[in-house]
Structure formats: C-alpha cells, structure tokens
Length: 404
Image (cartoon, rainbow, N blue to C red):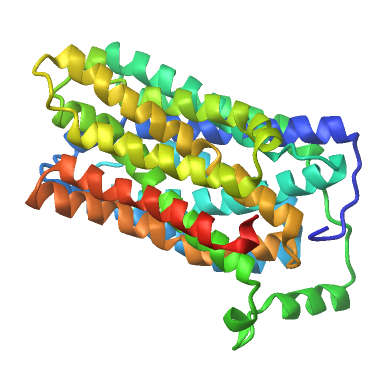
C-alpha cells in the first residue's frame, strides 16, 4: 500500500465513506459548472479570451496543489489531507457566489482550483487503497458516484437557473449539504498509522524529488500522464464551455441549455458501464474506444450543427455529440487509476502526484485554447480542434505497449 494503513472500521463502511465524499465533491463541482453562463454575464465577461483567462486561474491553482499535497501526505496522511482539501473546495464554491468583482473572483477561482486538485489526489488515493483492500476493480464505482452527484448537481443547477435563483443562494444551499456529508463521513476514512518523528523525517526525505527523478520515473506513469493530459483538455472544455456553447453557438433559450446536463448524464452512464467494459475488453482497448467516442462527438458538435436551422434540431444534434464525448471521457480517469493500481511499482500517492505533474498542462491549455480560437475564428472551430485530442488518446493507447 501507499502508506501504512490501520483500518478501524469494516471495509464496507470505509468504502461508503469515501463514496459519500466523492458525492459531496461532485455536487459542488456541477453546481459551479452549471452557473458559468450566469457568472460570465454577472461579471461582464464579454469576450471569450477574457472568460478563458478567468478559467485559466483554476489550473494554475491545480498546479500549486501538487507540491502542497506532496508536503502534506508524508506528514498528516491522506485522511487529514482529504478533510482540508474538500472543506477548502466547498468554501471556495460558497465564496464564488459572494465576491464583489472580477479580481476577487480570479483569486477565489485560484483557490478553487488548488483545493480541487488536492481533493482529487487525496481522495483518489483513498479510493485506490480501498480497491486494494477489496482485491478487485471497484474504483470505477467511486467515479460513477461522483458522476451521479454531478448529474444531481446539474439538475439542481438547471432548476435554479429556470427559477431565477441567483448563484449566491444556490451555492449556499449546496455548501450546507456538502459540509454535512463530509462531517458525517470523515471519521470512517482510512487512517495512517502514527509514525515516530524519525520515520516521518525519513518518509519526507524519500518523498522529495531527486534531480534525475523524471528520468527514473516509470515509463508507464509518463504515458498515463500524457493520456490524462489530453483527457483533461477535453474534460475541462466540456466542464467550462458546454452550456456556453449551447447559449452562444446554438442560441438555445435557458429551458433548452442542456449541454452540461447531457454530458454529465452520459459520464455517469459510462462509469456505470466501465467495469462491464473491462470484462469485455482489456484496458488498452477501453482507452482506444473512449478516444474514438470523444473525437466523433466533437466532429458531430462542430461540423454537423449547421445542417438545420431549427433550434430544436440543433439541440438534438449537439446533444448526440455531447453524449458521445461524455461516454468517452467517463472511463478515462477510472481506467488510468486502475492501471496504476494494477501495474505501477511506484507508491500510489507518489504515482498520482507524478501523473498530476504531467497532466496539469491539460487544464492550462483548455481555457485559453478555446477562448482564443473562439474569438479569432469560431467556437465551432475550437471544438473541432479539441476533438483532435481524442485522436491523440487513441494513438497513444495504440502504440504504448505498457498500457496493455
């Protein structure tokens, strides 16, 4: 295991606790993403590059999170890191609804990104360790729970938008719900054994990257990090621009701006089917199929959207594209993490940190790439370019033997 663990509860209770915190994170995330068109309007972000730059602060925060987690893990373990991370994430969401101006929003989104990635790394470390306790592939169920929560959050967001509830009230309700879930679940998480000061110091020193650490990194982790990078470009594009795409490209009314909701429903559906896919295909093939779905989905949304003038038909066509993208992206993270759990020789927490260090470039690319192309050509052209990252995933999954 990644660290010496001392299970104080049954594996079923521990699994439920981790699932509940995934649930809290998913609801918070979808609540934020569903209100992005409103946030764009409230803060007067008229051009796509400005909006893209604002979204750029989130991956900057995610990058900062990597050394922070590396510092915290050997000192306090993943359990306490989860608590710090998820509480910071929830409170950052609450702050988004309160900030008075775009400069304050920029700072809050930086913190939002920092706590977001801290939660991802620490919570997934718990999930992988639970999978090891069970001795069978169950990590997809954690990500399916996150996707289910995101679907619920997207539905709540859709309802709040159509009832004209402003973001601050919406986020306040979600904050109370999420904090309640975390406080209930925290005590049941996996807990590291208390170490002596000498052991702590040794662990800390071992966790400090050496000068040639990248050269000695497992090739498997580098390859998975690049796949994760490409997937994050796709994922962040859909998270941040899907409802904006429906609003701006299709000119759909609020009652028909279902892009984010459709995408999240298919992410949930795909994650429920991931273990079934593992029984039918090996994980390399799953990555190839997923990348193909992403590419085809973006082609439909970017190139076929103008075959009809009627808004309703455009919504249907675009929804089909978003469904394929959601299905493709759904199994990327569970498959990557599962391969790490199966094959990586590096300890889990360190492996995820290394991969995050490679993949964080993806979220940096996405907002500025989409924003600049949208301003200078069109948002449809931006979506076509992002679709090419799906082909990149297929290529890497095909040529890299380590992923089999």
